[in-house]
Amino acid sequence: MIRAKALAIDLDGTIAFKDSSLDPVCIEPLRSLVKEIPVIIATGNTVCYAMSAAVLLGIDRTVVAENGGVIRVGRDGIDIVNGSGERCRRAYGILQREMELEPLDWNLRKSDVALRRNIPADELSKRLAEIDPLLEVVDSGLALHIKDRRINKAEALKTLAEIVEIDLSDFAAIGDSNNDIEMLKEVGIGIAVGNASESLKKVATYVVEGVYGKGVIDAIGILKG
Image 1 (tube, rainbow, N blue to C red):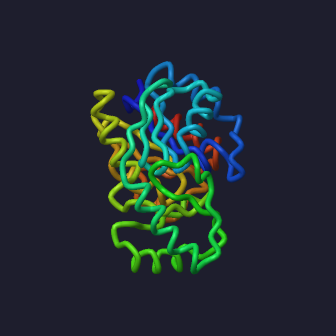
Image 2: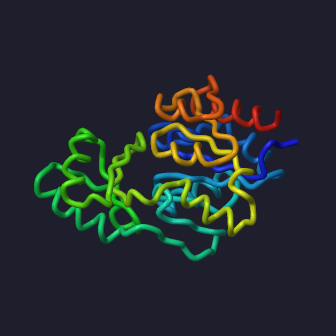
């Protein structure tokens, strides 16, 4: 018997390697699991990327993207957008005049601004706090994100839990990066893969030895008891 009624799972650094290629070892285990419970991608990446990965993996077409800033319910659903993408872009406009910033997926993002990790996150955070204290910088391991500090994957899952009528305490979550911290803290079972950040491991219910897809397989083993 599965120990959770739904699973939220991070994408880059968890299901996928740092180059964004899917780790094939976890595809069949996830496809098997989705026959029993919903398996929902929760990523810092864009909706289109998350939906494409969900289709390739053969799991649910409901996704959380942009670190909780966007929710897509179903393949043809209307995006639920949280946070202020305009506010993030306005702050970026100031920052880019002072720092060498390289935006990622500029035309695809609705809630945050993603940047290449070519500058120190703490330097960016310090200046951003002076520009707009309601914004923050989160390092997903793949990119730096300028986002509304009130928005995260856990807050998105609270909204999604109401829509799918599954209590958040009945969710499990798997992740690897600091942008997964709130999510792992709020769900019933939070699992960090072996390559996860030390900060995430500290808040996880379980930390598995396997890295990337092998860690996902370990996590599924825990959920199946």
